[in-house]
Image (tube, rainbow, N blue to C red; front, side, top):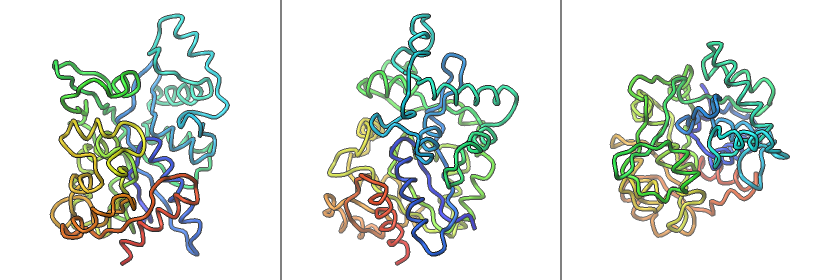
Length: 323
């Protein structure tokens, strides 16, 4: 069995995974943890392959992330980005730290040698002892783009980072998804899991992008997967815990509420994704509706304010499926 399998993306997913790791460390018999991480945010920039979500998870679990900014390496300098701006190279609104650039250069070098992204991740993690197995969702280049109302496409990073999700979006497009396949180990981890967790990541452009990869959603929703699936709401009292998930949900016609996100994922016994759904105490009014729909539910404060609190949240979510 592959133990605890977590679908995650972004800074919220990285912090959630830190809680999963701590929760398992508390157990008498810790189980292995596998993180299946969103790669839809990836992009080519200044000749380098950038993988923001994979790096956020790696840096956060390695203890070298910048907690203040929420992304990148702690103690960063940005001299190279300044030089690139002077040359007019790259995205001036997307700053790469000098330490972070070392990671991107190493990754790109290995990719150009023919090493698949999953193999690159393994090589990077030889340096960092993060205590979990981290898998990219796919080795193929599948990038999330935004179709604007005029029909033009924009990379997700430009819409999110430069425009702060303020440009009205028509839909999200996973460019290249038709020919993509899950990275080695992804489907096997799902099939062999003891329990599957959906992190407090953006339901649309993190978790949704993972599910877009052919065979991932189908495998998760298949009743041949015996592991229970429990999610933790990224929405508290009608607002996203982090980022602009409300703009993403609005684009796909989903209300920004804990109950609406649960309905969006769907109940597994009816062909959806979830067996159980943990909400914040601010959303306790949703519990009756969710229970009537068939979800196993519970509530507790969900802010990932510390490693210990994050682990307590994970324990509460796992307790739902242990019922």
